Image (cartoon, rainbow, N blue to C red; front, top):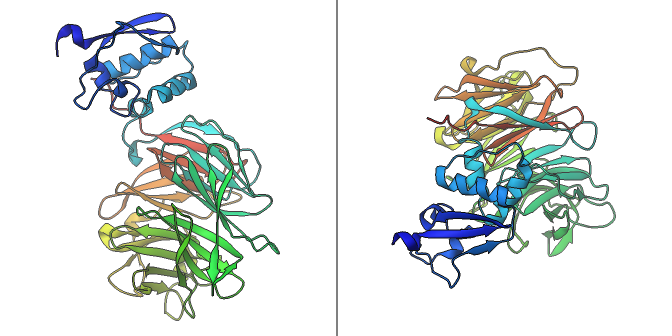
Length: 441
């Protein structure tokens, strides 16, 4: 590529910029600049020596410098959200995100900002979006925020209580709700995250008849399946499976005698074993049920319960559970905020409580929330009153704590898009934690 051919001139909003095709190639094929190149990334010459772009010239200069240096410098006269909008137009949001903060690391997270919710009282759930946004469920409403943390039109469920919410992609959200009594409508819907409009209703069929049902916990697989715990009026208790693309029900695991699936608090799809973790926990039920379901042969391949076993009181108060495939174990947390581990290689085995992973005790708030668990990139996270503890290593040793004194207890948290979102019980305040970008050497 010759020097003259490599040089490019842009007129952006009346201001002229000069750069090279080599610099623009750093934008990637999915950017606006990528469309200016062929398969070999050779710039196709045009009759004009100057390319006019009717956009903000100040932001263009910042983004062009980002492509040159891989570093983001934002002058004080440019609003941050304006830069984000311009980056979205050019297809450079991923570059801005990569320069704004580093790769997710629970031990290096720093509080970025806090946002007050729209309604007082406890929220139902907070879920991180794949692009760094989030949604907050409260009562019959789901408030959706994009990566710039601007709120989109809320999802209104018309006085139906939201049980869970999950992201299909950055544009689609699945919401599970209680059935509408007397209406026979399904308990799950697919909504647009940008407009809040209902796109599709999911139905449960039993004996060739559509049934009204309450949908509970949600989970999603990489092969485009949606899983939800279902509690119906006839015999449709268990876990339903739907196709994300068509919205059609494709399977159903009926609740076995003496077990509890339809009231499940937690579902988790395990990619390595092609199984689904189903956990029904205290206080929803007096007894706890944890199982692994294999839908290929309709079999419960592993199960644990505190029924009929000489176990301690601690084990009868399991609040959350999460499977860790690499260590063939399930981590649980009790109401005393102790961590325990169950060996998946032993069906119905007892819990091994780990003193080295014992959570640090603090002052009990006036309205404590139940602890929650999450596993992300080899690190284990557990909420505890008004803080989140981070555990690392083969023995899951406590290595860091995330805490902010304002907002009360943490009722839920979620990790995604290289951010951790923590929802507090007071006024639905939620915090955004990010990993700082590496220092410039």
